[in-house]
Image (tube, rainbow, N blue to C red; front, top):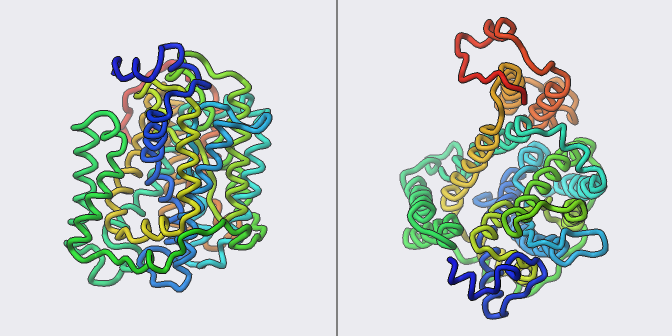
Length: 471
């Protein structure tokens, strides 16, 4: 690694965001960043379209809208990344931050569109646009609200996001939602293809190094795709019907105001903004060995929100900074924002070619299922890792217990709220929002410590490993 870094530049140059390495080196490094985030970036669009009813395996006449959403996910990840790396005025951190479609909003989006088809997408995009503008407006204040989101709260939220998505991964691996109730669902062929993806992904993740390990999920999907192709599970019809070039279409799905969508996206924008602050800090620390400046954190939040708002105008989903690319910067030791700019331009070019989206749409849902089982499981693991920083005194155990029980319970039994008006029902059955709200409120109002006597009667004798220090 030392010799590789010496070829890239001097130690001072490697830590400088404004340094431009030789173009022959910068281009492959920029494409590395794209490979590290590509699968994660297009997955939310596939899941939302599937929940709405025009996704993989649906045979819906609206299926071309999924291809459009994939294209916009690729293109506006590139646009949002350019906002971060190049910036406009106060907008953008001017650091090597890669933006991509966020997993965090999926538990909010699924109840909003479930079974409603393309007709629900106008309200969804209205929420994306307004939520993005709200996100951007948080920029001057983001440092002041971080106190309300310690690792106990953020770890719980990330864990809840992962738990909400694990079910989707299993459904996809077994054959997809349209196949539920048929003989095909859960067939040996479906599980074989999904397991090939999982095994290959794990093999590359743990037994290789460098870019091979970083792109393990992508490699697993490619191998699974080849296996599915050999088994006759792949159809290329969509590629032939797709155009070679197409510009994005403003308000492709229209624009509607939905109170549930606006509230949901605005609340999650706060969580996403905090996540971006963490990524900016991680890049500054890992790449340059310093703390992130206030201007960098504020600029990154502006770019995060405006990138999401613009994406919503053109039919894409909210963007956020991608943590896996923070790890890639630490691995390469190169802090250059211009390298990431090259990756962003590559994404934008791909987003203008509908055949790219059509090619992605040929991936069998079982293959994608194998990949998302790993990805969503890693989201849960990331949440648990964040929770490992928590001091597990009795106070924090009670906060975690109540928040998780109510949030996960409402998510698992949505009919428990069937008599509520639609707006609160949609928000509460996401599971994520009630869990986050309860955790934040309890963390702010509960006294710093609870005595043994106050909690032992509700723990059923399972005390856990307790520490009596403060948060």
